[in-house]
Length: 259
Image 1 (cartoon, helix red, strand yellow):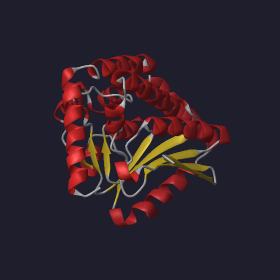
Image 2 (cartoon, one colour):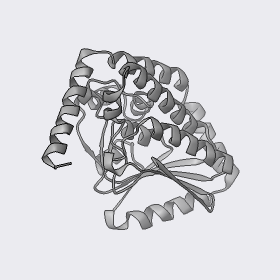
Image 3 (cartoon, one colour):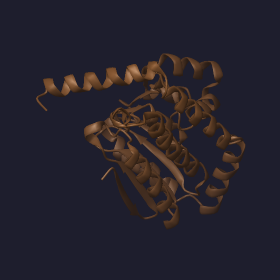
Image 4 (cartoon, one colour):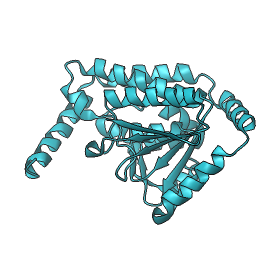
């Protein structure tokens, strides 16, 4: 099971659950995540929480699945199309969507985090766009949301250099709302989620809608342009080489571990 779902007291919790792959998102994960968001909407959840299992949030798309695909660009197109639907659902659904970040949020995990309504991180969490490391362009609305948050020049720097950001650094850039001490993270984030749940329903809903109407001008068109760019880079020799290098390093690592 790639996704674990729990609904209690109007709080719908979605846990990314592929700990052996640092919660990397494969086709099944994307499909289940979209299904979970739609289920949460159908149940009338006031708050939707997205988090990762085993102390990490998400390491992005599963490159192993890319490497095993008979037609890698087609596989990329399939997964990015699902990711776009996930981002659109997060932005337009009536629930308040909160990303809880422990460990790493890299690549698609970074994009998923900043697409959420609110981001809550543990003190030791790390953020990295990561895409340039595999000669990929960003997806999941990352170019849209990051540019809105930090401006074009800073966003370009972050996408090109792919340097790790601490939770405090991400908070300083406006990408993270709250940073809690690791030891208190579950308690403090739980209190915050309950506080959000107890907000006046209609006022909270309409406030989210108003802000999204301002922020999301042409989001759908931008997601489509991102998708086309990602599929194009998936056909490049640079991407194929870096994907081969990644898979080779993974095989060597597994052999050295005796697995």
